[in-house]
Amino acid sequence: MRYNVADPLPGVYGEARNREHPARFLRHPLYAWLGLRPAAGQHTREEHVSLRRWAAGRSCLVEIGVAEGVSALALRETMDGNGTLYLVDPFHLSRAQALNFMKRTAHRTVNGCRRGRVKWIQQFSYEAVHAWQQPIDLLLIDGDHEEAAVERDWNLWSIHIRIGGVALFHDARLFKDGWTTPEYGPVKVVNRLFRERGTPVWSIAEELDSLVVVKRNA
Image (cartoon, rainbow, N blue to C red; front, side, top):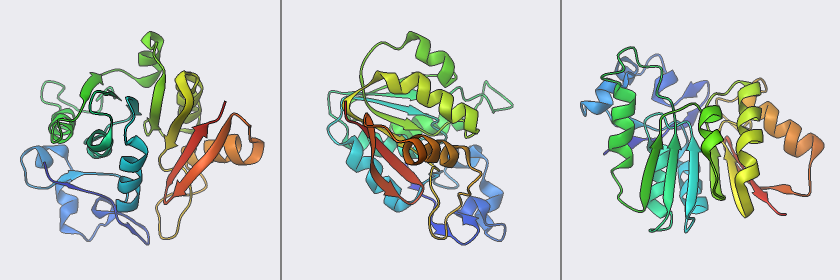
């Protein structure tokens, strides 16, 4: 399935935030499902490359917040061929759950690659974690962006990340011509946990556009 990523422009979050762009009328996921527009990725091209790089060869990957599935596709394209990608999203915003074109679009996008296995967990992240038991190689936190929700995802899921594993926070830093602001929940959480406090257990491994990658050292 075709997809687009969000190119950072002054005051613009890709096509979706450009009020003058004709594609703004096609924002509903129905249009992606119908093939009238590509699936919309909410990350930059550089972030897409970074997602693929960090996913390479990893066996247990978890993404919180799937949207139309473009970031999940990036992870699937390079993960271990015998690994499993767990996609956690309640897909609760659709007015017609029987149709739910966001969910349909995400499934179609992710199935654009058949590498490894994919398990869909249609729950809120704080619900899904209760049944979680295995070590995680890569965790992508990109769900509810409220500060308390981001910190809750971190506290509940990070304890399952194995030594040498990584957690990726999206929309978590300011960057030139980008869309994030100091008030973004992920920005506040990353700043507080890894810049102001700091810990020998976790260290920042990469910062690229809005993406911050932290690695578990011990």
